[in-house]
Amino acid sequence: KNQVEQSPQSLIILEGKNCTLQCNYTVSPFSNLRWYKQDTGRGPVSLTIMTFSENTKSNGRYTATLDADTKQSSLHITASQLSDSASYICVVRGNTGFQKLVFGTGTRLLVSP
Amino acid sequence: DAGVIQSPRHEVTEMGQEVTLRCKPISGHNSLFWYRQTMMRGLELLIYFNNNVPIDDSGMPEDRFSAKMPNASFSTLKIQPSEPRDSAVYFCASAGANEKLFFGSGTQLSVL
Image (cartoon, rainbow over all chains, first blue to last red; front, side, top):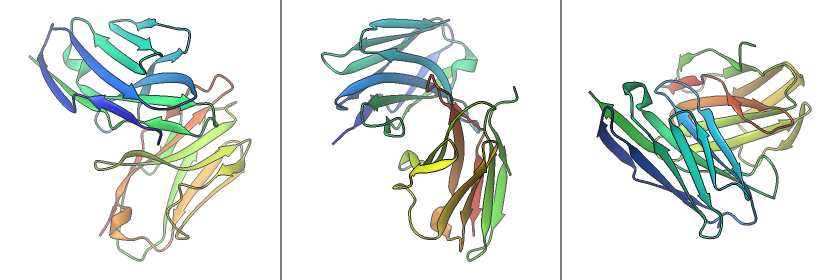
């Protein structure tokens, strides 16, 4: 069964610190992996989309890595800010159709002052 | 562009009533999705339209749910009759050829 698992479920860090969120997937065949940020009361917003051939992709203070061999991805947040407090959702697209995106349940991050 | 626009933002209704959620996708996008989000199950696909045609409705829970896309700029999701277990946040999302999904702000539905 195609699955996406994220860890940790929740995380609290101090403002200015770095953190790394994990995503493991079993989706096969694989097309791409996406990270979304969802603020409370808002819809998810795309951070990165990575294909099989991409190992690292950055978007400002957000850096995503992908190891397609081990089916693992991580999202690293550098110098966290209060506005980084949100849920971060990992989504994997297989080759069976655009609508067959497999969503993780997210990591809830709280950045504390 | 204003992004994906959903209405209403909040809907409170009584069990048995009809609920209609509305979505205006980003102009030029040919893919439209309806998702439901709950704490327990996360984001779940309800239905997927491509070029206004329903392609995959396997996620629609039951016959009480229906969705239409009469033209490229408008879609509705209807629940009739509504039940308390339908309470959730419903998102509409659209995408163009690059398949980058843009979500609306969602409709928070509460069925009492």
